[in-house]
Length: 371
Image (cartoon, rainbow, N blue to C red; front, top):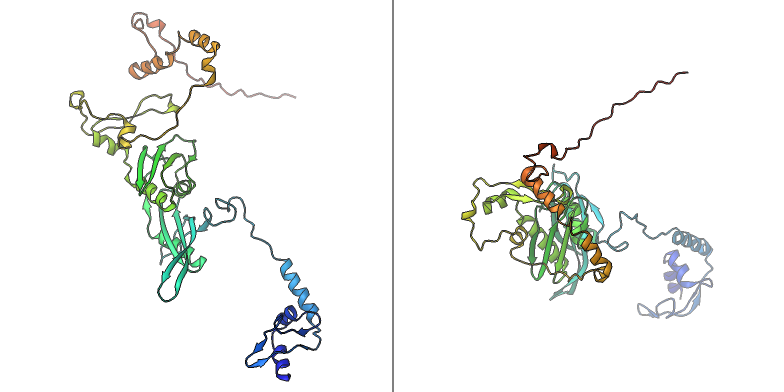
């Protein structure tokens, strides 16, 4: 019994307080094992512990000061405080080379198991990250480890060693619409004007943020496997062609129509040797969108006419607008063809040519205050 009492008292004070309680009694099978070695543990009362109350107060204070992890809205991921979508910083420097201006974001973090012959199911963490400097340089990688920090560090450093440079159109979007596929996952990417924003899958949106792409629309068809989406999107970005390459490939001018320029045709690239109309085959595809998408068509919902088209007032509106319904198109055609709005009587009556309004600067008027 003396040996038993000595073994119990030799345990740490915090454990004795938590297990034995206020009366400080040993109960076999309740707060102590039934057998200790080859000896049978019996019920007994131990001397009173004078420091028990202090230990309880200390434990209570430590638990009271514990706070759950709180993140700012900019530091949060896609859903709450989970890792996907969160930033983990730049990759570690390699020798004298540092990754200044880089940021790494987690795309996927999941638990995977591998069956081993000796150890059975081996548990590890699989992390998919993407890193970039917001100026066209980015890379992605997959890292696996038993520990969370080790998996994040391994994936981040691997991504820093697999960087790719992606060319952007005017530093805000892609050069043209394109179709890309990896496995059964299909991605249709559409070029958008400045100010449109990123309307796409959250993984593609995160990749665009680290790349520096600000305006984009992307639609995914088929499975939404995250690794397939990332690989398909990077393949499409690497395979896109500049306007000069498209002009040389087709032997024709590349003309752009933009809404902010009133759909005025603008030649963005010209080939070194342009083909004539006779050299173009009758069955050749001249539609730009159809050419860059590889003769594929994006699946879209059917658009039904608005409800007001069935009302009698809509017919009255069409009758009133019949006289001027094509004025915008005619005006645009005249500007593109002649550089001004004109008619067949402009040369005969040049004084009827529409005046070009210019913004005149008003001189600054200095006011003198006299007392």
